[in-house]
Image 1 (spheres, one colour):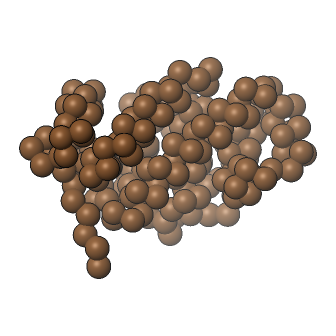
Image 2 (image 1 turned 180 degrees about the vertical axis):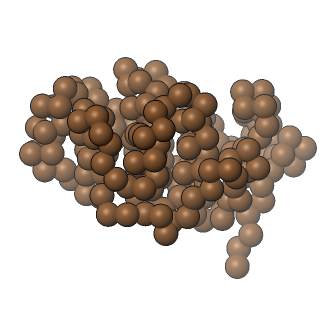
Image 3 (image 1 turned 30 degrees about the horizontal axis):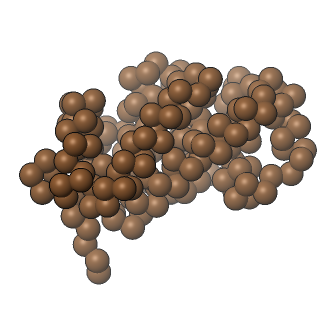
Length: 188
């Protein structure tokens, strides 16, 4: 079995050290996801950069978390489900939305549910969504820009979810209260 190193400020490769410092400053601790990514400085930089870019979209925090948590659930990422549940709670995402995302059930708000459904379609069909899926998404009040922003968020989750699967990233203590298991995955 291949064991991956979860780095800290002292053990991280030289090229990762400034990123470790920036992440620690931003979060108040160095999350295990990033500690694992630090082994590959380009991955760590790419993930942190893409996360910053995703935050610049026209999407609300709730909408961004819908995209991210939908992908986390579909990809079975226990680390990211716990982390994003905690992040969502801190960002005041409504509890019923968080619960729906964790459980794979419908969101009561029809527009937000359309975003969840489109995110599912993009993930499950690897981008080969039906034109009807795009049209339904646009009819719900989203734009062509949002279609592309869903792809951006999905790309971010490929980086983190796949890293966590391969490295077997342990959930940080800060996220333990929101632990999630892939067994909680339900049909979309």
